[in-house]
Image (cartoon, rainbow, N blue to C red):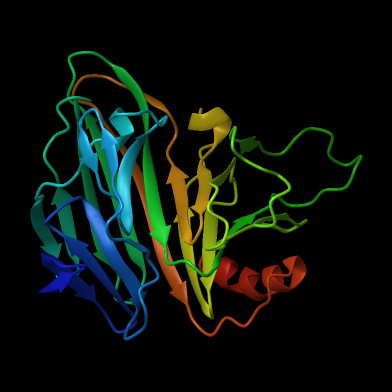
Length: 301
């Protein structure tokens, strides 16, 4: 672990092992700015210069990975995170990031990040209720990916009629979701969401993802995000624990915890596990892509 500059932010820390490199910043956040194979390109996207005016101040997305709370609301979700964060080293390849408390929303966020020595990262997101009353919320991990690739969401296992009569998952659409958009494709095995720098209008879909993973393929590098699904739990946005948003070359791969009624002082924790695979030679065709990545997913379950 060593101090580096990343995205013109001077107080960043590089966590590295033989396979991967990950960079966090302590200048703003909590944010993860870089994750990629050792010596390779950053799989995370950058958003230099973007900003959104809110009643709480200017929100700057920066890029990379951040922690929000769901359901989405403005200005609460867009509370600026432009101030330095406290940090604590938890080992040779682990760091805990603690930003200032969000006084308006009454929450304290933190992210603990660890590399396991084999290129895999574990992210533990925590949100604590600082209010004097209970609040219902979910932890929400949003990862901006580098444009030019496509997100992959697994379908639930195909079971022919009439062997299965009940629905197996929720597919959630927003008011601006256009099902005829060429960026979206629905196969029997996978749902794909492509980036297209010429298509500026936003697109978003959400699902109940019981398979516990989603991925992003950029060139021949596959990023896999794993997260738990809790059977019987209530999830935000009509049952979503996995969402994808894109506009132009911008794309986010998101996971959400169950909704929880947090009593004063109570904390919700949501864990993501990241992996990288190289030399992935697959087209965006449903069966070909599934056949290529399925062994990678299954061998690391």
